[in-house]
Image (cartoon, rainbow, N blue to C red; front, side, top):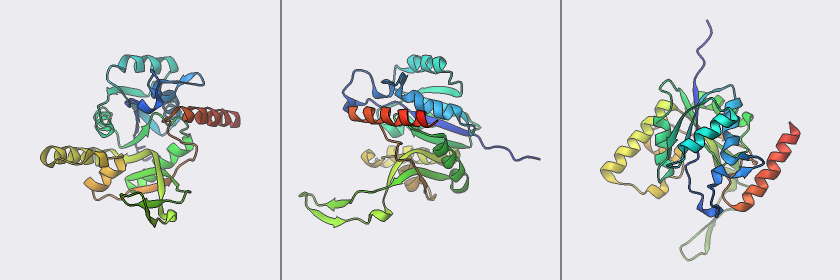
Amino acid sequence: MSAVKPKYTAIVMAAGSGVRMKTETRKQFLNLLGMPVVAYSLRAFQQNDNISSIVLVVPKGFVDEAMAMCIRYGFNKVRNIAEGSDKRFKSVYRGLQAAPPDTDYVLIHDGVRPMLTGELIDRCCKFVLMTRACVAAVPVTDTIKRANIHGFAVETLDRSTLWSIQTPQAFSYPLLLEAYRSLQKTIEEYGTDESKITDDAVIVENMTDCHVRIVAGDSRNIKITTPSDMIVAEAYLRSMEEAN
């Protein structure tokens, strides 16, 4: 009798405003070599055999546009399109609530990281089975210094222990959902500095006893934030397509 295959749901975050891009069109919907930026992440999950379903989280008022895009490109794994909130962690929570109830593991991914590869998805799926929580990351290569409030360097950090965190970030679905519920309760009862909630791993680290495993990321897996990032993304995508 074969083992039951775990069900992975990808939650693609595309609810940001993208003010630093300084364009009328939100960056997740900008045209990148003929497709919207977010479509590349959706395509990567659509083509990956591990992923059984996708939840897409978009800004308020963009559900119809997102649905039309999914239909156009044949993203039939998209089971739900949820409207996001004013803060990323609140948008992720809405994505979690929109996931199929039989989900075992979730992969949270920034929709403005279009260079997502099947290999990276596979690594995250593999390690989350063993650890319940893992994040893609690349080693820090620059020298990192800590400064005081006056702008003077006071310490040079050991970069051999430092990692630049990317997405996907993969978790046991019950674990992450419970962590978010605990966070919500903490905010309601005690308040918290929401600026310190920078990613999902931080929530798991603070709301559960689970340790988060670092998984080898990809240097090409950049996050599009400024216009110059679009130029880099175009070059990366062309080289990746040529290699295939």
